[in-house]
Amino acid sequence: MRQEAVGYGRPEAAQGIFVEFRRLYEQARKRLPFAVVQIGRALRNEISPRQGPIRLREFTIIDYEFFFDPEEPGCPRLSEVEDEVLRLIPAELRRRGIEEPIEVSPREAVEKGHIIMEWMAYFMALAKRLLEALGVPGEKQRFIEKLEWERAHYSVQGYDQEVLTERWGWVEVSGHNYRTDYDLGRHIKWSGADLTAYKELEEPRVVEELVVKPRVDRIKADFGPDAPDVLRLLSRAGEKELARAIEEEGRFSLGPYELTREHVSVSRVKRTIKVRRLVPHVVEPSFGLDRLVYVALEHAYTVKDGRIVLKLPRDIAPVQAAVLPLLARDGLPEKARAIYDMLVSEGFDVEYDEAGSIGRRYARCDEVGIPIAITVDHRTLEDNTVTLRDRDTWRQVRTPVERLPSLLRDYLRRRIDFEELGEPV
Image (tube, rainbow, N blue to C red; front, side, top):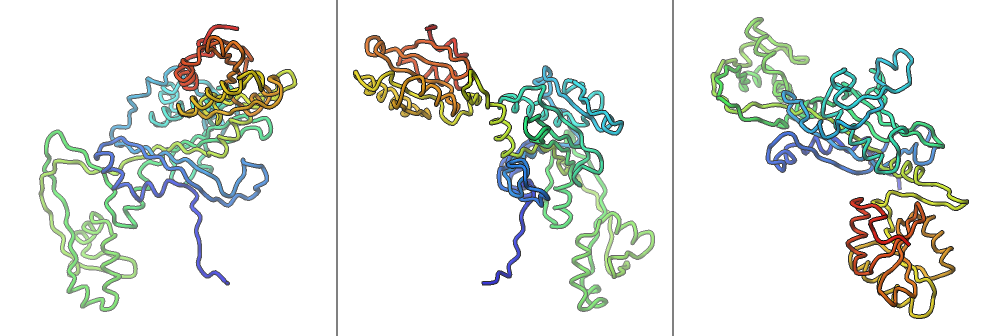
């Protein structure tokens, strides 16, 4: 059957956030700054989708929209990332053909004008930390500023975070843009919805405002069937510009129509205001989730003594531990099963494996990236201790079974190092 309906693919997840700004602002208790994150599928007209997960027409995007008062643009948390070093290639260097990054702290980047917004510098530093937590060292990361013709239409400054990969070279994994009030402003203009925020003034102010009201009866009489179009255009017109033209020239052009003092009334009204209305500005870090997965896997893939070791960061490894009886007899499988069940009941993602030699099972664990292998042997039956083996270093320690849940939890959350899990073997 022929399909007549037309479908549209969204290029980003951000617009849903902007459209729902009023509700989100209320959920944030009408306080700025606040942030909203949305993860979802996006589609773009990728010309040459031939590079695996790097070039996709459909991909998963993480859009993080941070709303703040443009009159208070400072970032009070910038000091939290002062020790970070950002490797930047600003636009001024790119114009001169220089592709070697400069190294500056986030605060230096702002003070020297390389990054125009403190909040953007702060989020770029956090993005660098995120990639380091995924296993990408700082020297294999850089931020490259978009030139004017490369930037998106909504951006007044944009940096791409790139990671050096073995197969594809430098690959963008996140984009950081200062979107100003472009998105909210456009939605306000074309929908008429109130997407503003407000801030209480320290002292009330008396202001004089121009109030423009249409004379509906006269508009209907003069424009007949076109009156609805005139009223619609009039509702979207800027009041200040319209009032100035009417007061100074006595007429105002509105598309194909011309309005005079007979069609609108203009008055000046004084009122006391206690709040300041504003359209928030936005800083946006945006990540390609597919690419984050790819670079994490590529930097985790290593070969040690001819064996594959997938050195996934332990806090993102899909399988957190493996329980391995040394032998498939002598009561060891039963004890190992009991430990496995205990860890599963504690919320851990655990594998159980008793097939093959212990060396082969260690190799299988290393290959799929399991951080910790827990070996149950004959000593376990005597003193209720087990051997823990580190995937990356192959070192081993001995620890009591009853301490496993708390120790593993701290280790997987990077609160302690492997050596703190028990006594060396």
